[in-house]
Image 1: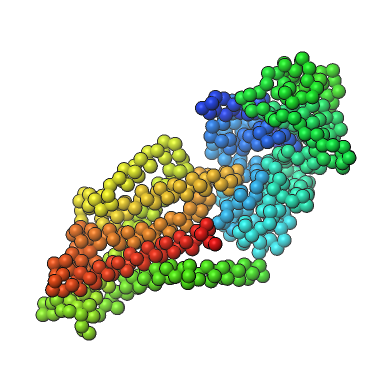
Image 2 (image 1 turned 60 degrees about the vertical axis):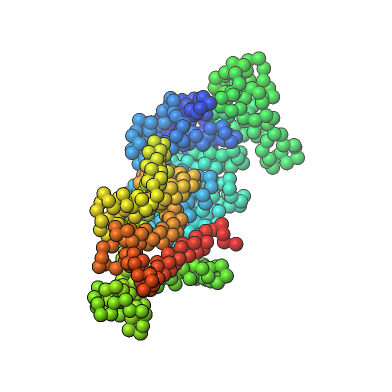
Length: 332
Length: 288
């Protein structure tokens, strides 16, 4: 098992999602978008949650924040943050956790910043909200935070508006805001998708640095396997609302076990596959109300057999490494 | 350094956008509005005579060097009364527009933010107010509140609430779709703080433009009420009651009607031009 995960008691977990089910209720019926998801993040660990668009990874994250859209509902499951059950908290107590104990870094930083407020007013805002810090001091702390995320000339740049920042700086400012109160958990929802590759590398480096210096746990949501390989310690692969494979980053990349994970890896260009052809996965992710019988990947699976009409359980294929596929029944 | 650079480009943009061809009307509006505001503020110093001083010997005098715009049926100086009337008009319009702006913004933002049944009830209430002709509603309100200037301000203010509330609601709905509102929730902002910090600053521009246009309308409504004897009470001068008096002397002393009428016309024109000009100037869609 991964060194971070070894010899730890469950009580130390930063985030423990257990058996989470989220459903959408609409006029056309019920759509189960997160289906019995269990996921853990340990202190100081960077966990990748990967999957295609529509696989339910963002909704899983929003469940942790308690910010699901109005027509979505948590049916069952528990979410614990450092042992405290979040779903039992009142909305007011829940709000106190946001920004203070869990921070969220969104995909598009420019659209997540208020266009009419100066950057320091926004980066310092968590102090104002949770600590009732006076404005002048909050703004001073914002400058320190901007310096900490390597924004040059932070005192001057803090007085600017978000549109005067480059894309990378906007994302840094969002990270600075997230870091303000030194939260235990940082949830990053594809924070580098909108950025150039070089800027992307700088942001990833910054996230690693934050983990080293603050011991912050990071749940990193992405569809980019390259980032997962580079940044994360532990990986969850999500498909159509369920986690189909989990393992350490080495296990996932060296011994992918679920056919979906294998297909994802074949569909990603790397230095080793430069001469071989990229393979796209045929078909598309099924809609939550059109899931096939049995295994949810069956329609797109190249190695399906009779057994797949029955829903497979998680099979252990390595230390802590599980895959939800009948092909793994016999072991790795 | 960077401050200097940005202010430089901002000033360039400002002067090129203020070209006469595109913003001449805004300028005319601004000049007319400033004249009205100056008259209102400094009526005591500018006016050559007291607006109340009776001088029956001089009644119904035509414009002359002593009385530039003539005298009325009681011998009062028309210029002085017109200048003082500007003060009442501006006062009433200012208070009324403030009531409408604040009330309408609160109703509209709450309606859009909470949605559902709150939205339904508030908007039906606003439509009820909207369904009355403005002057009729003002007369009903004045009749039930009693005739004095404060009640005129309140009545006109209430008339403005539905218009502002619709505008605020539409603008808020647009802002609510923005990601920064969602991002504000992720750092633990409360509803009240989101309303004040994220939504209000982003919806204020269209509301302020609407306020300039509403100002013109408020001046007209105040005059209409005073004309009907429901607003400013004699001897207090108001363009509306001056016009009403002038109506009786159209043949002998036409300046009694023409002067307050022109004042009203220029004031309303000024605020309308200012409102339209500001809209064009501030609207990003009309910038090229």
